[in-house]
Structures are given as C-alpha cells and as structure tokens.
Image (cartoon, rainbow, N blue to C red; front, side):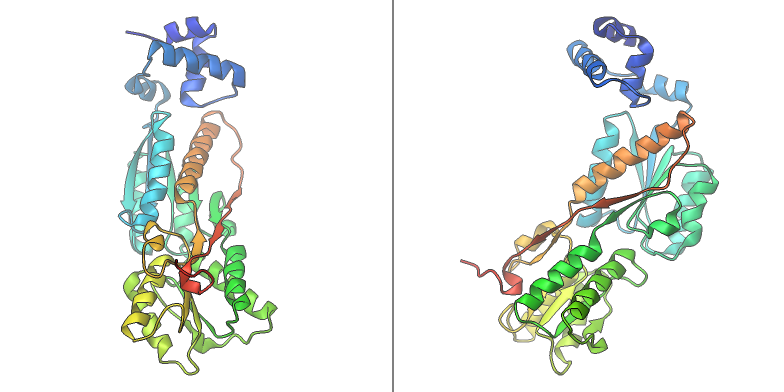
Length: 340
C-alpha cells in the first residue's frame, strides 16, 4: 500500500508538507504543491481519512442549514459545496429549516453534539440574531449565505442583488414601462429586501411614483406568484410589467396571466431573478438575473475550509463579506426579445 512517506520521497519534500497539501492547511509554494499533487496522482495515493480524523481530532464533516434542501435553487448550492469539500476529505450533513425555531434546533443539534468542524448557514430570516451568535459562542467556524453582513459578525457571502435589481427594473423602464409591480419573497428575507430596494431605487431615479398598490407579498413559490399576480391583475390601473423577486414566482405569474386571458409579454411583461434551469424552457422564456449557484457553493465550500484551517493554525478570525457578481439574461417574457 502506498503511504504518505512514498509520496514525500517521490516529491522530494517532507511528510509534513504532503500533509499540508492534502489537508489544504498552511502555506505551500505553488511549485511544491504541484510536485506533491503530481506524486499523489502518479502513485495513485488515497489518504487514510480515518487516520486523518484521529490525528487532527476533527470530524471532517461540514454541517449545512438551508430553508429547503430539496429545491433546485438550494440543491445547486449544496452540490457546489459538497464537490469542493469532498476534494479535501470532508463530508456534509444537511439540515433543513423553514423558520427561526427550526433553524435554532438544527444548529444547536450540530453544535451540542460536536459533530461538525464548521457550518454553512443560509437563513430564511434576516432577524434571527440568536442564530448568528450561536456558532460564534461555540467557537465553531461559520459561513453565512445571504444574510446582512453586519449581523453575522463573521464571514457572509451575499449576492449583488441591489445592483442587478436596479438594472433589470431600468430594463423594463427603457422598454416603456412605468407601472411596474413587485412581488416580494418571504417576509424578512434578506435577498428579497435587497431586490425590492433596487427596484425602488430605479423607479426613483427615473422619477416614477412608487405606488404601494403595485407591491404585493409572495413566498418564493410558484403558487404564491400565481396568487399575487391574480391580485395585481385586478388593480386599476393595471401594471404593465411585473418584477418577481425570484423565478418560481415569475413562472407562477406567467401562468396566472395566461389563465386570466391575457398574454405575456404583449399585455404584461414579467421578469424574475435567479435563472433556475426551468426559466429558459417555459413559454415565453423568462427574462431574469442569473445567479451562479454552483459557483456560489464552491466559494462557500472554499471559505469554510479556510476558516477551519485558520482556527487550527491559531490565526485570528476576520469578519468579511464576499460579493457574488450576477448577470442580466434577456429573453422573451419582457418583450425585448421575440421568439423566432
């Protein structure tokens, strides 16, 4: 059986250096790292995970808390995290939480059982201060996704929601729309709040009145988008465009317009946010903002491992915000692109 000593001898480095490369800990020169990785590949060396766990006194497990682990949106993020951390011998445990009480129970279970080396949390609510503070009190590395940076007190990964919401609303305005409605996501959701703020900014910048009758609640589901759209279609004067805070609600809104006997985009334009896989296949194809979900997961995976390694090396943890850039995707539902 090939051992770490064999790898070290072939790469002409110490076993400690090989260990740092395998565990992604400490500083290793790029050229040295390449020699070690080449030796690992040539010898077909597989690290003994159980030995690593015993030696490091770590579980080699990352806990993840998401609102709905079964959805397409969260599934892609989870896949990105899992694929990244698996490369370094880590496994994942997923907990699903739909409200603040479930969040606290899930995180407490992970922490009190000392079953995880770090946590990645995507909280449905931006108001659960106890959730943000709990991992810090336990000294557990944590990375938050889509929560207010000032509340986390640690590393948080956020989407460029505000900028892109301004951009997509301006796109509708440039197409001639001034009665633009907005369908919100779940109450207290940070992404939804930022997207609404961007929508408001674009209206104000173009001297368009912000009319509360064009603002309606949804819950990030197709059905809530469908029901919200039916209510908006009864408003007079009727909006000529709808910006839904996510694609699921936008897809529901498109179906509501059809059932109402109107057409998209001829009678009412609709845009969404996220660019989930079904957005390009519905009729008409949905104009939206592309969120690189898999890449977001990869960034989260890399960041949580860096934080775990920082603690093991007694480095001072830093508070940081990582912004994920997004992209406007123009299709038929806004009326700017006609299907051929």
